[in-house]
Length: 153
Image (cartoon, rainbow, N blue to C red; front, top):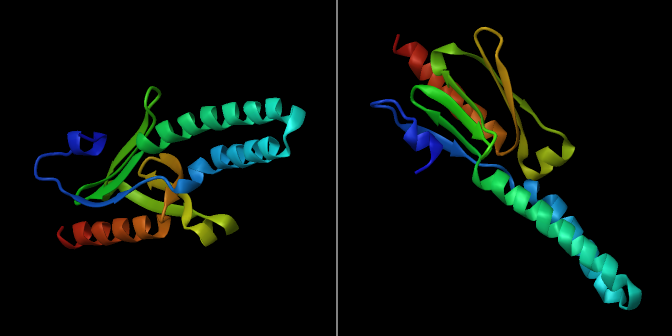
């Protein structure tokens, strides 16, 4: 059971879920390509290729843990985000307390569909969550839910 499902309030339902984008695996992919290039050259470059395979494995494990332990959701009552396994960073802001949801995307992020979401709550709290897949959709769903909550008041 996921962190979000375990921490739902009674009567609360998930409207939208988001994950990290596959771009978190870019460094393991780069190291693997470099290793293949070294191995294809043959000769003394095999040692360097082995080093890059080792780097690919280390960064791949780290990226996989980060990817699998990150969760983001919008419920009918809150915006929830959690990153990390051992060292956990989470935010749970009631929709009535959300002041802003900022999306930051660079050129590559716009092309590939990822970005940083910064949830701003009352009291000045701002938590950035980087490399979220489809951040504009996340913001749109949050704004729809915020509007529904304000209309029902």
